[in-house]
Structure formats: structure tokens, C-alpha cells
Length: 132
Image 1 (spheres, rainbow, N blue to C red):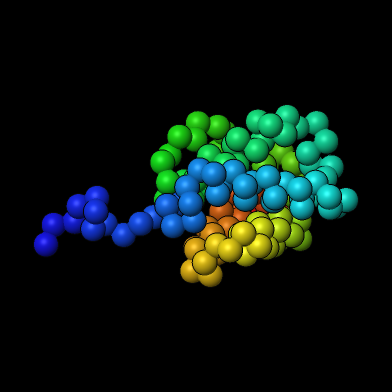
Image 2 (cartoon, one colour):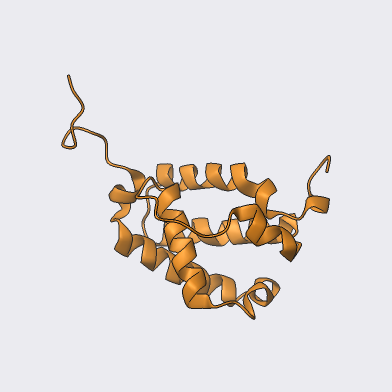
């Protein structure tokens, strides 16, 4: 049996509704993050429209959608910020809570959690990582 577009399993991106669902998740996610006094300061001088676009493109890739991201790498963008593990974990919790709130299936949430775990060392400050 040949896998065709009709028989290929849908990506998580397609399963949750594509671009409009990713955009809704990004908006709700940043509403939560910017309302948190521990996290809002990271974004005080950030162009939030651009930031939202970047996250939407990155989340699209994470979910198996089209890769159109051309921004800086995670480490380049985050290492200068000195982000502690506790703040990274909090942001991850907001992202998963957002996906749950929007009805994203648990297995897709688990996939996003796995990616968050894989990229943590690129985001968290070097002094916050064991053995660094």
C-alpha cells in the first residue's frame, strides 16, 4: 500500500485546526505570560506583534506544519536573557494550559511537552543547567 496525501496520518498541526488554531493558542498564551509579573519583564522592550509571529511559526513547526521559520535560533535568542529553570517551567506550564484550554488532544500536548524538554538547555541560562 502506498501512502498518499489521502492516507497519510494528519499532522498534529492539521489535527488541531492549522494556522487559525495556532494563532489562537499564541494569543491566549501571551495573554497569560504577560499577565504574570515574574515573566512580563522579559517582554517589556519586545515587539510583541513580531514575537507572536515568531512563536506561531515555531509552534507550527513543532506541531508538524510547514516550516517557514527564519528567525534566530533558540539559544541565540534566549541565552542573553539569563532565564532560570523556574521561569522556563512556568512558560511551559502556560503553553500546555493554553493548549488544554483550547481542547488540544492530550497526545498532542504530550508531544509539545517532549519538545519543551528537548530544547530546555537552549533556552535556560547556562548557570542553571546541571554540569554546565
